[in-house]
Amino acid sequence: MLALHLDGDLAPDFAAGGDDDHGYAFACGDSLREHLRDCPRCQTALRRARRLDAALAQAAGATAASRWGLAAHGAAEARERLEQRWFAAVSAAAAAAAAAAVPPAGPPPAALPAAGGGARSLVLGARAAADDRAARRRLLARGVLPLTFAAAVTFALAAVLLQPMPRPLVGLPPLEIADVHLPPAATPIAPAPAAPAPAPTQYTAAAIQHLRAADRRLGERRQNEHAVGTPHPDERPAAAPEELGRRFTDGRLDPAERLRAFDRLLEVARGAGADALLARTACIEQLAGGGDGGDGLLRGEAYTRLRTSPGMLGELRSRLIRLDADPDGGGQPFRAAMATVFVASNIADRELDQWLRRVVRHRPDLVTGVLAAARSGLRPHGTATLLLDLWALLDARGAVADEATFAATWFVGQPAVVLAEVGELLRTSRSAPTRQRCLLALGHAADDTTVPVLLRTMRTAARGEALTAAFALGTLPHPVLAPLADDAADDDWLLHAALARAGLPAARAWLEALDLRPHELARFARATLADWPGVAPWFRDRAPQLGD
Image 1 (spheres, rainbow, N blue to C red):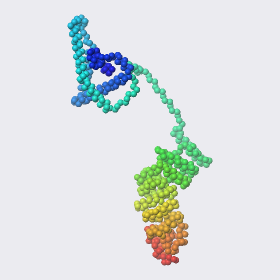
Image 2: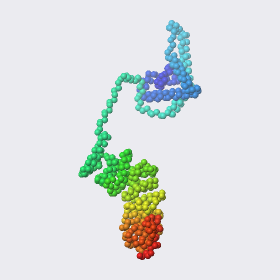
Image 3: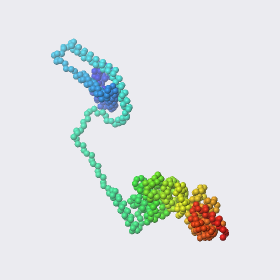
Image 4: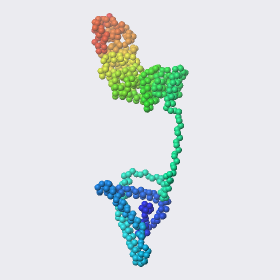
């Protein structure tokens, strides 16, 4: 099968002669062609043989070309010489095949020798020539051809193994022997039907913007006309982040609707893109700005929901990191940086507090946002700790000139819960600077809640802390100190000094009894925390009679 359809020859001289070594004696070309049309296995074997034959020819040619190129002076000269030898061999083989297939024209019949010895010698000569060709073919087949075939198979296998494995041929049609009739080139091809045009929609970008503008105008008209009831947020089209922030701070709206607007703002802030960035910015600015009708309960609930929003906590953290990396602002204007510090201070998160300490160390001017957040009362806990840590940080950097003045700036107007935390820190702290700052902070309470702590420290603590407690007691309001003047003992000179420093009218007699000179009176009136240990003992050393 392969000899017929791959090589085009069944070696009829071998098949017809007495030599049956090649196994072609039984073969018939017509029967093999008929068998090929009906046998899928032979068709598959023939396809594989043709591919293998092509691979062998390619590998053998490439190998011969490369070897010839190594022996020649150049690649181009080697290729040219190889082509010459190749075509010479092909031409010689074609001429020999044609000469063997077409018998030479003989002399006219009259010139032929008569039957007898001439005819016998002609037959014998033809048979001798045939025997000689058969011998040469057997020698070639048994000697040179096996070696050449082995070398070609080796190079073909190497080429196939080095190349990617071809995909398996699945579902190939059976081998067709008949010719394929193609349609004429002039046959027109019908064009594919065009896709139907999309139906026009009325929801274009301009139409949506128009609807949103119309909705905003309708809402403003209803508010101006004091319309009864407000449409539910689900009935409104999607609002922009700026509009949601405006609804949250609008005191004319119902608190429940304002919280729904804030929830929608947090929902948008959890996403990604421009709207999420605008929502996070609007959320921080509206919580820091106050707005109209910003009551504490509503904002406290908003901060409670903000503390559970990972997107907003991440936004605050990234802003503080940028402020810490770039003290000039980190790409944020001063107003935006102050809003970031204010909102982050009210979160009461340990990581955010740590970043706040780092930011204030580089930007002391932003501590105003921390103080405003502490006075707002929106931070649930840890306010006193954060303030005292920042105080110590600025004091270490030399930014605190007078601690008494600094305490007045930081703790005047602070909520009672903050001062209660300060008292607890005073009770548990063992650091002398921290205890002194706590005492100075307790002296700026608006009521008498810190009086017991200060009196107990005056009478039981060491001399330095006792003097600081007396100094802090003298900064409390007069209505808080008035009952102390009525119950003061004659020998309680430190309490006398504290009440005289406060300028209480009931303590003026104790100050006059000291018989101080004008410059001493001026010194006592302007006494700072550093001067206080030098002027307070006058009420003990210069009082003539403690009983008068």
